Length: 182
Image: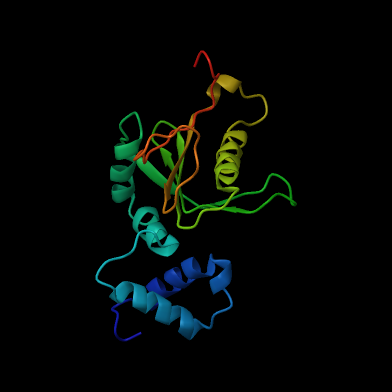
C-alpha cells in the first residue's frame, strides 16, 4: 500500500469495484490490493479492462460526457452517473450490473458497456439491458408518450457477426423500429 499514494478510503472504493467481479470476490484483501496497485502503477490504463473502464467513465462525468458526444446524435449538455446495479422488479429477476449507467439532462438514459470477450448471447443481453431501462421509466397512470429513448453503447474487443456487413465497418447501430418504413 505504500507504493501508491491512495487513502484508505480510496482503497476501499476500489476494493468494492473489484468485488463486483464474481471471479475476484474470493481473493484475499492483500490479493485485491496487489491487483489495484498493479493497475495503478501501469503507465496507461487498459480501457478494455472492466475495472479501468468503470473507473475512468463511471468516476469522471466530464470524460463520460466527451465520450457520449462522440456517439450520440444530439449534443450532451449534462450527464449524471447513476448506480450501475439495476433494481429488480421481482425477487427472482436476473441480476443486472452494468459498466456505466447515466442519465442526460433531458431524461434519456445511457448504458455504456465494455466487453472484451464475445458471447453468443451478447446481443440479446444488450437488448435485455435496454428493455429493462425502458420498462422502469413509467409509474402507474403515466402516459406512454413520456417514455424517453434508451441508448446502449458497447465497445467490444471482438466482432459480432452481421449479415452483409461491409469489410472494415466498425460501428453498428440497432434500432427498434418498423423495418420497411422506418
